[in-house]
Image: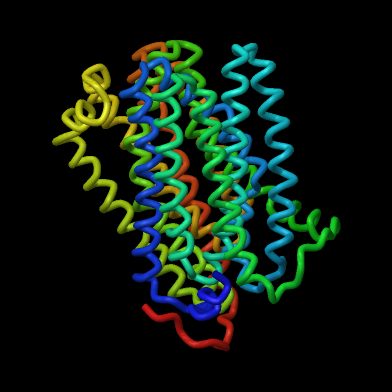
Length: 433
């Protein structure tokens, strides 16, 4: 593997079209795999089983994202290489242990059954392992080698589907199925992700424990970690209210339909991960006009794709629900359109937020997601009270619209400040288009 990587070489400047293609393939397969896990549970089990799995996701994902501090994003936009790969790995490992401790405390305080506590811990472990892989992805992104990211995702996604659905069909145990996912993700991390990242980072020296550097890195990334934790919380908050007011069956239906909109990540995440390192590079050069042009173009493409997805689901969404899930889910076609609309608005906001992240305005990112969560806390109970599960969907749209509006406003402020800085002289060649 080391010889192959050396022969391929590290190309800092790579065509955006090529990187976007690899990102679409990798994220597309991975997003469809996550959807396939939900669809598999819906086919093999009951709506309640899907609901319990979604509840475990809702209990673990915000904690893991919050403690993860989005270190992979910081590394991908670390154009000056201020920190080594080892710094990011050590800090992510420490925060991963903290995340598992918090998850254990949360599920124990929620007085859930023992099997659900163990399932939540197993899923938390799987997500911590995923976070370690993301650190490697951040290193790949900085080199603009999204083909390596795609290769890892092509392994992790399908293997997770096989592990979850295969084990569940044989044992009817959600605990063992989730543990199987954790095992295959650990295998991909130790066999592929870590070795490749370590080889391309060998020039930065060996792994060293420097508490001062780690604390500085942690302090720098806390605002972004809080922001993304709130982002994940906003995606999962409707599940808390649906579970509390309507029960696990409605939670299963709500979550299964929401995952169809989440499938749009096969386009949005590749777009964000492709343009973010380039935006950071333009920031370092002081290329104000090019920065604005890339942000505006990315948002325009995201809006066009969102509209196309909504039109497609309006035409054939009910048939899709019957094919992928069951007739029980197909009866909620209207809810599908509402949840997909909310998710697509949320992802367009994410494209705008990528501009803020590239500018290093992590505190502004925090404001965006905090505003969305405040609206959700107010709107969700009212929406469920007046319209049940449909009301929960409408409340998610309100939260997503708030995120987008605040993100656009703050990016406009940041862009003005950025434009007032003097342009840096070109020291390196232009990126190819």
